[in-house]
Length: 479
Image 1 (cartoon, rainbow, N blue to C red):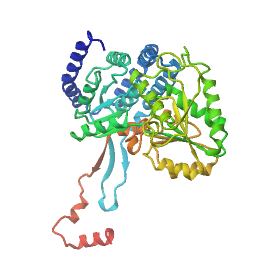
Image 2 (tube, helix red, strand yellow):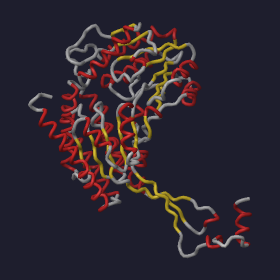
Image 3 (spheres, rainbow, N blue to C red):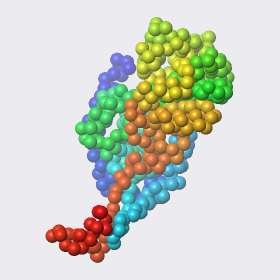
Image 4 (cartoon, rainbow, N blue to C red):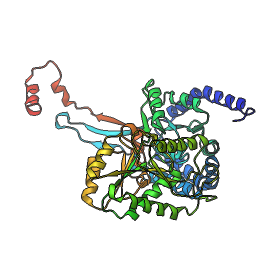
């Protein structure tokens, strides 16, 4: 920010800060005027969103790339536009079924009566979007919240100013501000946003920031969904073909230059397979990216602060005895950080303590599969876990002997793109879930409804107590 633009930016932030309460009030008023939007209305909202993304995809690709200093256009299509469009389509097709009240049984002692669950919109939903996938991580929650019939306020990241402004302009074309509003501004605006008394707040981002968001939401008893991160491990088995494992791990690690919350953070490899795995991994990466300089497929690190953070991890690891194996000889201009493998890592290194969120891959050797499980279970529960091995008994052991928000067997990342699977963390990697039906449920109140008509059999157990019929009821239903 230059000296000439700083006052203007500060005035804009101050205005945003002052307007947040008024914006929330307008959305609340609009929700009260239409507290149960019809399926047709919700489909109309979703269809308008889908058509907008299809029409404006090239502008979106350009804006995201400009914010990153180079983001692969194909990565934006594959990891942002495609899942956003598929998610909207999936919700639109199933919306009527999701909205239908669910019939529930009534116990014999309470007959005659009926019971059902009605899925009611919560009201106004707040969404805080990170910088790494600024489109998908805005549109995914927006889709679920609109499908559930809510109003939505979205706080975009200050680290992606072009994309944030573009999305504000685009959504403003198709939605009134009392239905969908995009909020811009720096970290102070984000902090104020998290303190608003939303009916639900979804935050995606770092665990450290998630703690502040949850603390702010607690003052209003606002329920939260936290999509955090952590150190997602990949476990390579003793007999899986290394080419298969290395290629799939390489894709998960290099997509968006590793700036993905479910990217493989480190790899557990049998001790006697480490060198062969490194060779196979290097070959896979070099097939994907024969060169880095001027390669439009290789995404840059988002900004100088993140670039320096990653280089700091490398310096810290090397000073503490790690072997750094760069996979490229070249050192390209700008913020394209060459992917590197780290060997001989230890727990006192920053790279093994913090979520990496970049193209650095530590390798941790293990003796037995039980040792790999113990290594994972001794650490905070991760957002994702990846296992590579074709033995089905070992696959079952991974599922039952470890905890993670989600698991891929013989793949990376792809569980996030399955709309019929819930997405969410566990413990330090998050709480709550969304995507698909789970997203609809997250942003709905499952309201229990018990219905009686004229005849009231329950009157038989009203006071005064001790009557013969009451004793009969006890014999039938208590003893």
